[in-house]
Image (spheres, rainbow, N blue to C red):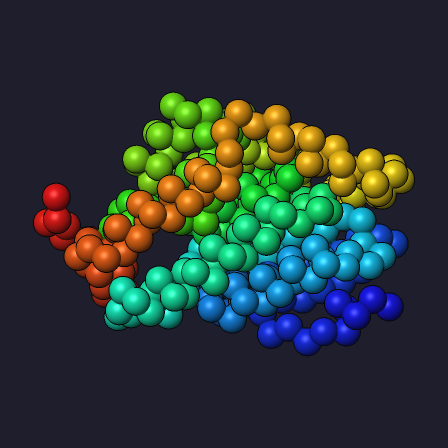
Length: 268
């Protein structure tokens, strides 16, 4: 038994569905598996541990608890009323978590079992590829709340779906379903909910049958094929994100969300 399975996480459930395969379940069912500070820190710890010592693991499958939500994104109730400095301190942990996830040498596969909005969609995009169930839905609602995606969303989305499509999705904030995600190239397959994990497990088993060294090297080689420097692009994303967080639109957007009303943006 690897020590990771013995670790007590409060927002993650870890399992070993087969030799070499680590199942990571986002577990905050009361809030649709939304990302709060604790979950972000625990994910950071997980990715860092796998970077330092992968142990027996060859593939990681990331999913959400239940059949309704993969991850609803950032926990905006936790963020309600935060000062700019506290918000950015919390976000700095998220930044490190996403970079550590990107640097994880193992293949990361997403089983999108439901809605993946905002930061949840960014977790999907930061995986190497994803399968989704027919009820999966996706969106970047951040501009409607007064800020922008800040967890590699602006870097991965155009790489996955093309620049024009990424602009449409980010500008509108409109939700789209699994079949559209498949057509856009965000999902590799759409399979029934009850077959989602078994289908991804079969693919993970195929990966496990290959050379672990070769898989890690080909992952690095494929990342190197990207035309731009993702890390540099993400630093620019964070700079622009912070400008939004320091402005009045973010405060109005989060207040409107928590008060269940339409936001009234005035900042230009």
